[in-house]
Length: 111
Image 1 (cartoon, one colour):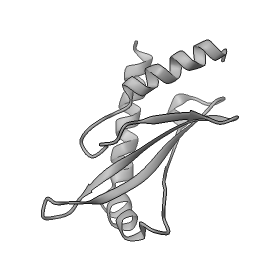
Image 2: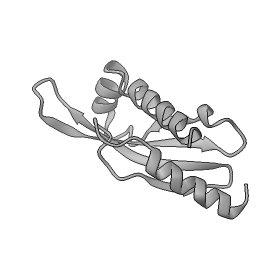
Image 3: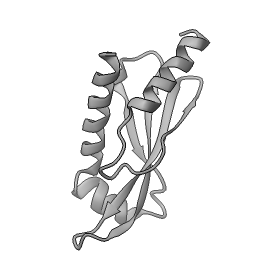
Image 4: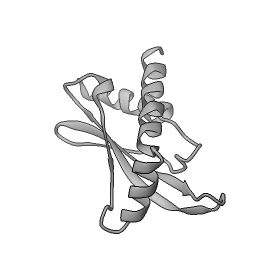
């Protein structure tokens, strides 16, 4: 992909990625040699309705794959082990974010 096209794509991706409903941060998009990487965080809420911290995550879109072949990774496992185990795995936050990203990609492709 040419530089101008890639920059345009990253800008469109920035405005299309989900926001709200737990994904409360501002998206940051970087590029590596092999992929476009999007960073944000999930705002955890406990059973009593109080905010319980954050889980940082990244979405990796490999350059030479379908947009739907992205990978999602929670970061800071060492310091956030309880939150990641409880929210990310048990409450299926990862699946929710994946579904939200897929909907965003479908919207992006329909532009």
